[in-house]
Image (cartoon, rainbow, N blue to C red; front, side):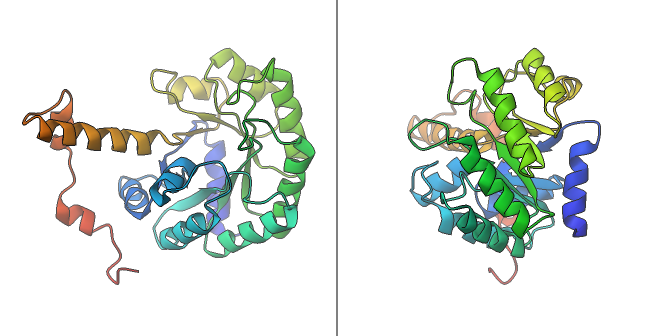
Length: 270
């Protein structure tokens, strides 16, 4: 097990949840690393939207791999969102993830939600997890189940059953986006023998409360990408209206300079 992968795994057992901000391009990942985040994830929505492709449909395998290559030299532990693995063939998923690992990626996020809004057969997702772990045993596989995200009926028993199947296949962590109800998260952490990942929701519980519920990792998902897009639109609207929109001054006060952004780019531009 490489030191970087050991370090990433240890971040899930620190007593306080790992805050994993999700980047969508080199600049966002480099800026987060410069702010002191030791680990950064990618957001499939941000990567897909930036490439002009739909999210969750397996359309961004090339773009995701290219981004991982660009981020490989950053001083950060990188976990990559690979949607459902960009294939239904476990061997193809494992081959793809092994290539990511070859570029220094320390973890992946692998989901069981399907593009048509249904859940994949848990045995299919478990087979993908097992294939990945066989190919790269020390890679941190965060298996995501979309039971709450897709609004299935009575999600708790389905979540636990799927989590246990993925864990038996070798998953290192379980991601359950869509709920930040503390009682629900506490029940999940008590019944799933793996670090639990929750998706941060504005206005929901903070890191301390999530930690007390047993959550080991908190991801921002597409939130940062959408906030950045909203700030861009608000600023453009303010310029068009020849004024500053509500909240616009706060954005402008913290605006990185041209030189600061330029400094995020490798000297050779590669």
